[in-house]
Length: 362
Image (cartoon, rainbow, N blue to C red; front, side):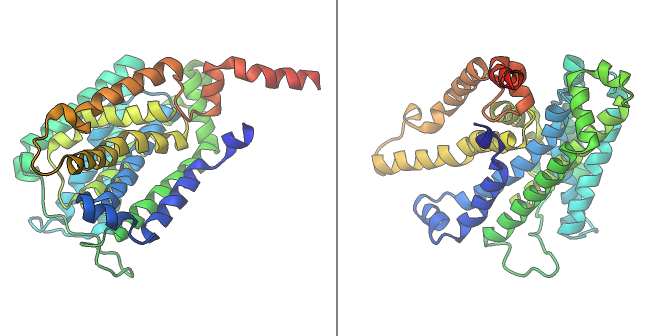
């Protein structure tokens, strides 16, 4: 069991994803038969995993309940749109837009974190929820800048110096770019988790008063977590807008998005990077890949002349199935499917007892 717990599931999963597009006909067969861009949807999984890791910094490491991560996601997307669409004079290109989206979202995260340093629990959740709604309605109402509910378009495909290829038609280029960015974010968070600031974040999560008494600057730790989490979310927003070719509408960055990503963390396991990846795979993959594929297979099996009734499609039942799965997880495994070792021992101390008894026997 110890070997399984230490196995690098996150890096193994990314390595497997790197191999999948190289298998002849794997994605193309599904695309041609079912008309579902499965390869492109895997890219969406990578983007949502980056967004989940941004929320993981705030919720998983520091224990601060943040319900406005979709707002930073939208800030990154619209920053990218303003800096790249032809209707604006900037058109600075993808690399610079990615940097600008990340830093802009991080700066807004600092502005949000500064006045909320003393808040925790429900109060912080309400403030971040309100902030998310302010951003969403601001995007909708600032039509001269954001084009209102229509969004900004077209956002050109990436153009990276030294990398050729047809980025507009072959999903594999952007697929590997998003996979590489996800890998970099994972490595950075892994190193941060083992560093002094990572241990300080965990101390803040466990007991803020004790952390303060030990000499930790909790205000600085919270601001750092807010800025880093917001910056990663803004980076994900840039990737999302680039993949779509537009910023989407403001409703794409509302409360539902924040709750969906939070469910990914809860389902996968709080405090664990691998749990974030697993949660995104189960939640977003269930909605974006599994449900459409099953619907297409059901429709193909019924023939073209048969009327499709709503309750005879998988999409009709998917929310009920997801809700039931979430209830069962919270009832029987509240720490998630792949929790951190610390969280697992807190909720299941009986599993730690045999190890302690063995050490005492020695």
